[in-house]
Image 1 (cartoon, one colour):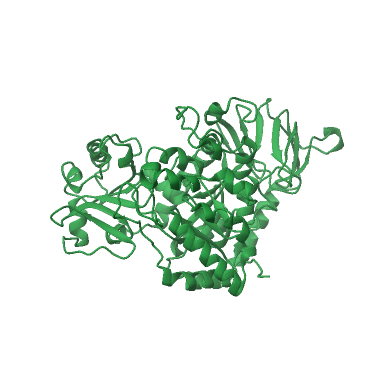
Image 2 (spheres, rainbow, N blue to C red; image 1 turned 45 degrees about the horizontal axis):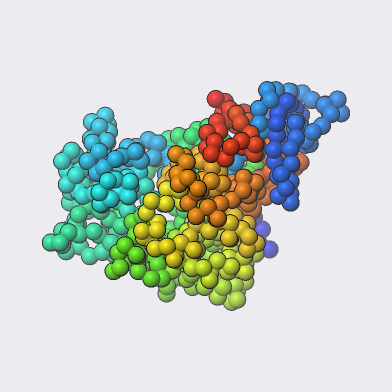
Length: 554
């Protein structure tokens, strides 16, 4: 078995930093008293408790008689509900931070409205060379049409504008950005991408999937200072929403090194399970470094994120049959079939977990096929490999996840966000294998859950609510959207705790509040197990603790 270690020269500094953290804690015992506590046991069964003793940042015992322990500090829970810190199994940490620091178009009502929001932001940020933002979604606009460069040119023409679609699989730019990148009517669409063009062949200003890289190459390079700002903006946001750990789905070499530096300095605000981007030129070098796990479990790197296809909303998800609302389109494969075997063999052969982005049924199908072939050739099924999103699956492929021990890493709010367009995209028949949470769970495979922030909002209680009700936060549709695939609150809770920890090889120290694990917990204002399901999303976090230390208070 491969040894998980730190590569030199950082090993000594990481060990010293971790030791200093422990010394600061000492051996004092803390009693968290007067709580209505819930956790799962190691078998995944929900248990309740009224107090918890913490020693050296870890849970020592539950439901104790305080007189039997030497207690140095008492935290009064004031009768609030205590839950384990929630784990988001798929997000983009610095992307969330960037989203919090740039123009946010999530609430835009039309292309014109979005452009006016960009104009306001540009006016307030006159020193920025580029105007960047995220969150537009033409499916929520009345005309449901892709925006155009002209919409932006009308309000910002002197500086380039680059706006990422809400799902991260398309970019909307102005003419200045296209001019800087040298984009003309003669520029061909790259493999795995599409430059949208009008009837005269002129680029409209929307770049799908790999085509966005033609513009991205001209964006200013991120600095360590910018990463710091993004990290702490995102960390504060997650802690306020009860997320104490997250799986970062795709980091490049620069972010890899940045996270190592932050771990050394003890400056990571949440626990990070980072997936190396399969497209990074230094992938083989990073694999050769071996798995990394910080002694304090703030940083773990032992997986790779690969990119199978695009997203459903931009018709980039790869489908076995054409789109129902665009019969000439099948979507896009971002990793070409001839490149899959070398990628799978390289990553899994290095002992790293492979986490493969697949939304359409074709992308899921070819990924499952490649996992099966790779396991037969070199093994590796024990690595808890994953398919990220697993959104639309051919019904005959549903059982293969459990058969192959490939985890479907899913995001409940995708269903409630997609419900207005998914059936249009793929038709009613293919919905039999779409967003099939309960079917997959019943097949015998764990179901790690997340949000895919900043594609969706990071609040995990929104995800718990969507998983249980299959409704949006306006209680629509009334009976739930394909409600037979809804989860129970216990199943959804497990997805955001124990199953998410398992998916990151971290269930030995995270995911439950049982003795020996880190005392990562939150205090919330209502009992999610004993309220009307429609109110789960309204849960407010009152306080967040990591390793027994208060890191957020409302």
